[in-house]
Length: 285
Image 1 (cartoon, rainbow, N blue to C red):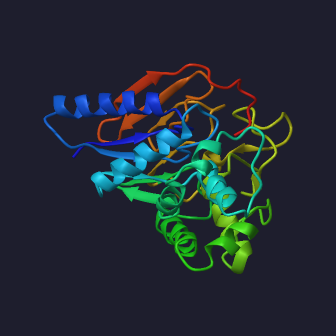
Image 2: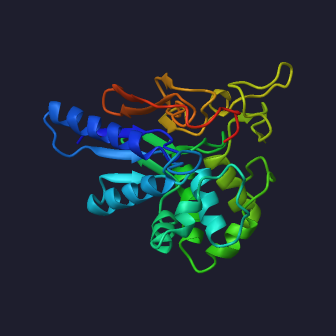
């Protein structure tokens, strides 16, 4: 089964369907009728049809269990938190149609059951990044800790306490909400890090930190323990498409007038769809 990973949709439902159709055609050309399709998160927000994108992804995953899956991104978590009153909506959100939809509870229920990380054939998929202290096995274990809370009885209380920039560096001794928050921030928010691995959440508008800051992309830290696997991620539209032997970055700025990108994890072939500039790029996601 050919496996394809797709970058951030952010409510671009039309482009998502075009790309899925291309994936199906590509799989057919390789003699396979049923490709596996994995979305790296941020299905919704900023784009023109968040409700349509979410409904389509839910329907696909339920119709093809095990073959279509989506990670939780920061915008997906934001929607869940707003829906239950644990977080205020932002003026730049495009979530009103979802929040007013007759099936909103089913959509939110499906979304909070999604994973925060996946490991497929030596590929570790996350939305944003991986703390340098974690190897692939620890990343999956820590993602499961948060998933268990999101799927448990205390999920609304967790969402109310999830937000914050501290702690900004992993320590195995972390516990409680500080531990969970650090895991969420690494998996769904991180971009740049200081040389010691501490996460920076201020600089979003470029692919590197300001001159003299010492900040580097999380994946360029020398001590990163996931160099023995290929990490697949999205979240960083200012960075754009990244293809390295052990790294695949898939946020090619669909909602900002870039492209929606899929990569076949089997052979690194690319499929892309051009996108209108639905939003003026501010660098903020």
